[in-house]
Length: 185
Ligand SMILES: [Zn+2]
Figure (cartoon, protein in one colour):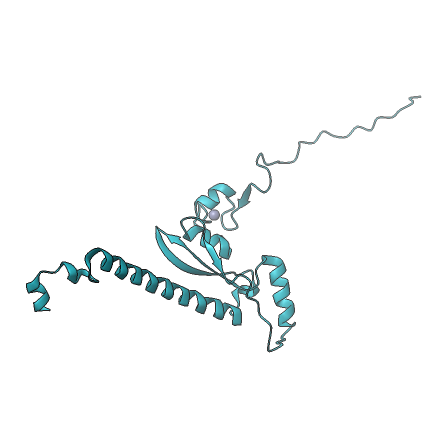
C-alpha cells in the first residue's frame, strides 16, 4: 500500500499571455489592434491601423494643441448651484461626482500657451464632467478666456505701436512712406 497517492493532472498549455505588461498598451475598440500608449500618444490618440479616434480628455486636447507648457486660468471657479437644480438626482451631487472623477471644478479648461510659436488662448471641454455640460462656470470661463485673448492682442498691438514710436518717431508704416505717398492718402 502506497503511503502517498499522487493525483495526476493533465498537462495544460499555459494561458495565452501578452508579452507586453498591462497598462503599457490599449486595444482599439474598433479594429482590435493592440497599440502601445506611447505610439497612441504620438498619433494624437488616433488608431494607427483603422483611424479610430480615442476620446481625449480636455488636458490631452490642450497638450496636443499647445507647443509646450501652458498656463491654466480660473481653475478654482466652481458653481454655487444657485438654482438647486434636481432631475434624476441633485445637480450638486453630479458636480461632486464629476469633480471626484476628473479633478476639475467644472467642464472646461481654459489656458494660455503657444501654438506654432504664437500666443493663444484656448478652451477645451471635458466630456468626463457631466458630458461636457455647459453650466454657469463654463460660460464664465469661456467669456473670461475671450476677454483675456482680446486684452492680450490689444496689449501686443499697443506694444508694437510704442516700439514703432520709439524706433521711427511715428506709429505705423506711414513713418516710412515717401512725402508723395503720404499726400496721396
Ligand atoms: Zn483601430
